[in-house]
Image (tube, rainbow, N blue to C red; front, side):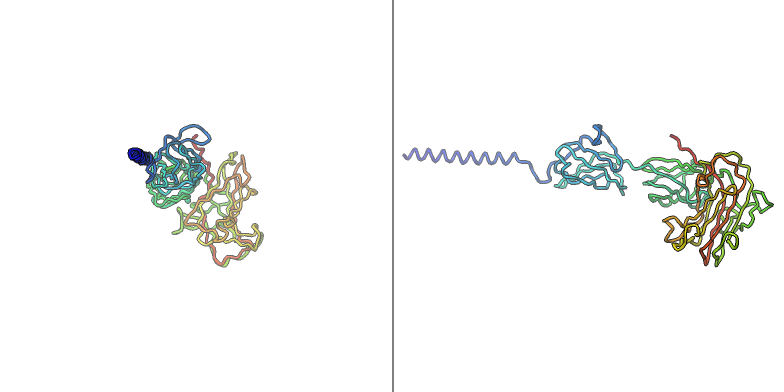
Length: 388
């Protein structure tokens, strides 16, 4: 009996020992959870297409393909965090959209962050929209002076050129770039803008003379001459953009009527532009409004102040910038001289001969205690067709 008890005790001891050994073995097979497992990306593709990509545009939905992705809690493109749906995160892929916003810092990387704090970086470029340039704030700005390139998607701009001459960039925003016009800038030059999203060339020209109408620089002469201004006031002083300009200025401007006491400045001209297709051309001039053109909700649009521009005696466009929503509250003023562009289609003119041009400023039923607006450099320009 004694030997049998000793045998039982030995067997029990062996069993306990085996259990302990097995426990140690089982514990050694567990993954170390501290910090987790480093994820990795093998390729990135567009969800709709089974093709590998290395770059993508704003808002594009993509699939990150790799390994150990199940613990990823954050995906960053440059310095922007993408929105993640946990249902679209597995061990081998993550589906998400590139943030539809402009980054503050461009790294050209996609970064994965796990719940344990591990970070993994892969090369990936977010394609920014190509810059769009619509105009220069003042196309007639002299070399050495400041103007603005106006447009959209003006992100991370590195260069602005007038022809082949680089301009000094003073400030850049998403919709405008303040620059100093380079010394030696040549009239007729195109504007080139280069940014992170690409390079674009303007469809307008710096100081485009086009079909020149008038600029108030010649002294008034007789009826029917390109230098006859009728009742237009003109002068040369510190307000000038270049030499003389026309102006509508005064105090206590009363409301006016058609045949009585309009506050007017009128021009009649005779031009030799015969059988020209004006349908795709643009009328341009510069304006400097020092005191706001105000909008009054109490009267209809036709009774607001405006500059009536009439071509060939019957084709009229009313320049009334204060009616735009951007100026309804503050009134229309300019920061120095500003270029105005009016499509000739607004006049309803196609193939035609221009032999008459008339300007009339009216206050109609509005009363202004003060008014000071200057105009100059009327011309008709042809937009440049961009290269394919």
